[in-house]
Image (cartoon, one colour):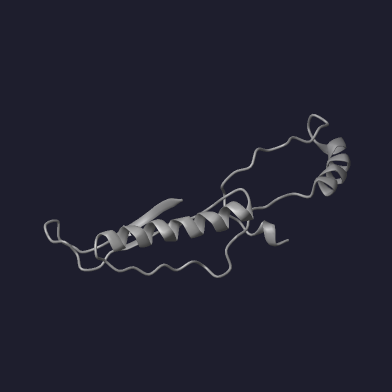
Length: 105
């Protein structure tokens, strides 16, 4: 969970009437991603309730699921690509939290 934008008010000595917090929620599995979304909302609701505030939360309706390669397709692709790679082998890259739409393919 990353907070990437915080907006509220325009004076250093006045508490703003409204604040917007924006960010991203990313995970290495769809199950964890959905659980993080639920927990983030629960923590926010608990916090605003404690302080007598209100909130709204919006998630992109078409979130980006993590890219998970099919092991059988990876093995086939590796066998085809290995002869043309610099060292004759395919490397395995550790999962990252980058967001992209390749998972939809």
